Image (cartoon, rainbow, N blue to C red; front, side, top):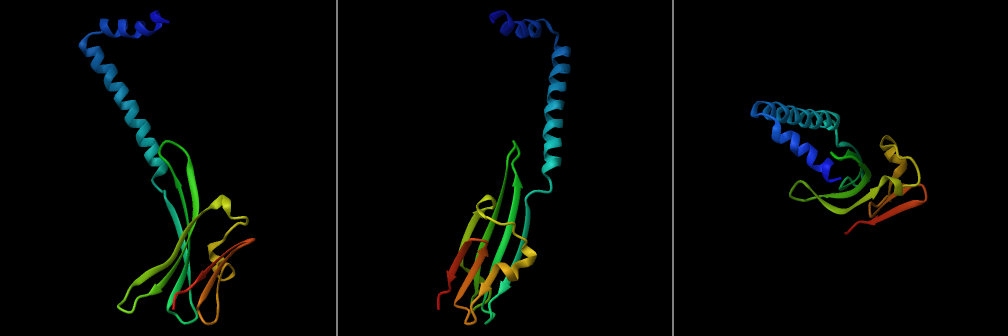
Length: 143
């Protein structure tokens, strides 16, 4: 084992400066190429898709977002974000409710284009329900 560990060092000691620069440059080029290839693979991430449904009184919006992302050193994550926003009297919006749900926790496939089936407002705009099969999330709107 000691011979194997010192073998590389012995060879390195006997190399000239030009050879060390050559092999060092090759090593740096390989590392940069690997990093560049991985960056190229991940350039389109994260992928975000979002839809919303306005309340009947048009004062609030129920958002449903899906995010898919990959990590540089491997692995990925998928989650849905539900967010209920209310219009501010001075303009803009403020969050009433926010929650992230991992995609594997939702029992059915979710198609954001079918938001009318997933998000339901009561007629008086006081309650919004998110339906994901057996998983239901109720948000009571503040008055």
